[in-house]
Amino acid sequence: MTKKQHVMIQLETIEKNFAENQVIPPLNLSIFEGEFLTLLGPSGCGKTTLLRMIAGLEEPSAGNIYLDGQQVTYLPPYKRDVNMIFQHYALFPHMTVEQNILFGLRMKKVSPTEREKRISQVIALTQLEAYRQRKPRQLSGGQQQRVAIARALVNNPKVLLLDEPLGALDYQLRKSLQIELKSLQRELGLTFIYVTHDQEEALTMSDRIVVMNQGKIEQTGTPHEIYHTPMSQFVAGFIGENNFIKHEDFYISLRPEKINLCEVMFQGESPPPLTDDTSRLTGTITDVVFYGTIDKVFIHLDDSGQTIMAYQYFDDKRRWQAGEKVGLWWNLKDEVRLDR
Amino acid sequence: MKTWRQSLLLSYSLIILAFLYLPIAVLVLYSFNNTRINAVWTGWTIQWYLSLFSNRHVLDAVSNSLIIAFSSTIISTLLGTMAALALHSCRFRWYTAINSLIYMPILIPEIVMGLSLLVLFAQLNIELGKITLVIAHITFCMSFVVIIISARLEGLSKDLEEAAQDLYANSWQTFRYVTLPLIMPGIIAGALISFTLSIDDFVISFFVAGPNSSTLPLYVYALVKRGISPEINALSTIMIIVTIVMVVISQRLQVNGSNKNNVYK
Image (cartoon, rainbow over all chains, first blue to last red):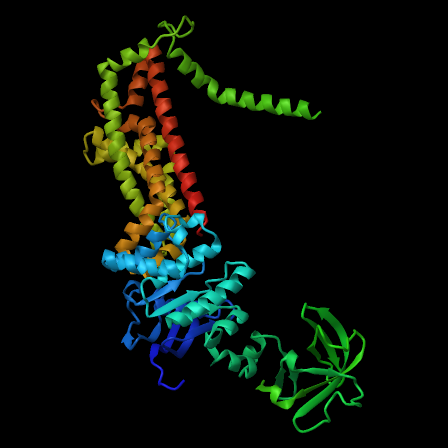
């Protein structure tokens, strides 16, 4: 990024306690204008609570929230220029699609001509022309999702908050809506804060990912950074598949796709000579499991007795079988050293 | 074997239905009987219905019943709705206790309710009449309203109210445009049940009615003491029909309403 980024949301030592439980210990985070930021973590990690505090549906126990430079910490949700897309859409069942979409503008007392202009824009954008007069229950899951998006976008919010918006949809639909959402965000240049526990979704859609665990931020970075240079064992294990090789006071985390398999003797040409930038081990294959484009090869290491998983690809010439002796090697730059 | 079992089951169900509805059927039938004596069937007539509508006492009782039913329905629906909303939104410490206290009037024997209300009104020197009847009817109608509306509120996902707030609706607007329309079927069902209960109530009314505030059931009871006449049958038939219609409508509303909402939970 060349120009200095404008901070859209600033969380300052935000903290949340429910009764005696500290759900979120003091936390700082800046979210920039126009970025697609994902809060990623297992359920119960506090990501939804954080989103709800930004929406105003939950009050922080301490700390400050700034929206576009303005203090909004204790502002009720209906006075904030952010809109949320709920996990189960929360469409009003007694209103038509059109009434649902117009609800926010009506509450804001936007003039009828302006309302009509904006609704036709979002309806075109979300391809809902044919469904304007339908009730939500007459729509499919994907269409309901679009109405929810239209209902939020029509208000021109400064930030769009999305709470696992694709969680209730089946796999194929989720895939196509992921792409739609991402291109929508890019087109509009709108700030998206997206909550999910699906790491694949986070990796494919986000500009930046915030990995959360037990209320704490484990790591913030681009999908590339999060995937390739995890800074904690949690991040390394939560995102993608990973091997952890235990050493005395540290771990080596090593992605299965970085591991090369070769004949155990290390003679011949295929494995490179052992140099300063490669590492090698030997082991016995315990299992080979078919996964479509890849097979997962489970290897019992000779020296430490740990099990490691590597891939063999569908077009690999050498087909490894359970019971075979195998050699493994990888480039040292591909391993990540993590403290215990 | 199978047909034998089925026919046994069928006849068993028919016996049960007969047990439940035969008395009512006989009553309805004899309201069209062309004689004063209940025991013999002599032919069809609607004269008992006609004489009913020209009987001043009956019309007085009907108008008393309607006035009391309408007033207690309106007041108990209003109070009950507010109570249900309050209980729903603030889950404070005494929630369970207050909730069961609201259910109590339904479980307490009616005769005890009636007696205790009578004692109370006597203590407070309130003259028995329409006012005391309305107050008494509110005590048990309101419990039903609270129960029915609470059930609807339970079925409402909190998301909807939050979504409204997120879309710039303040608390009042959220209630007005989202919560109220969604619990409306429950409110109407509660009102219909209240109306039915009030129209039909005998035991409690018996204790708290004044000399000039006889309701329809009380009037029927007074008539019966002088012997069962076909007019009573006719009157009862009308009451049964009104009750059935009301109950069916309120059931419909409750079922339909909850089906619609489940989709969005």
